[in-house]
Amino acid sequence: MLTTKKKKIVIKESQAHEKDTGSASVQVSLLSKRIDELADHLKAHSKDKHSRRGLVKMVSQRRKLLKYLSTNSPKAHSNLVKRLGLKK
Image (cartoon, rainbow, N blue to C red):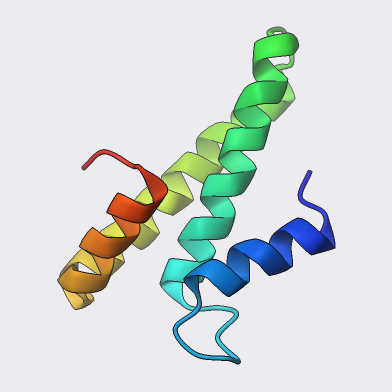
């Protein structure tokens, strides 16, 4: 689970300007952090099917946001993918 402090750090790293808290790049960064934490949880609790469903939904949402970024702002998309270490 992302605490408020962790969320602020992730937002600070990926925001375009000072008040940017909801752009696609910020959302992708937050989803990536949540996905990483949930994946670690599922490694320890492999039978947690409800959390696995949530993970699949988050991955799908992140994929949609990345597709949006790639069509509307390819440069921001490539920078974000490199920074987060995601594969294309």
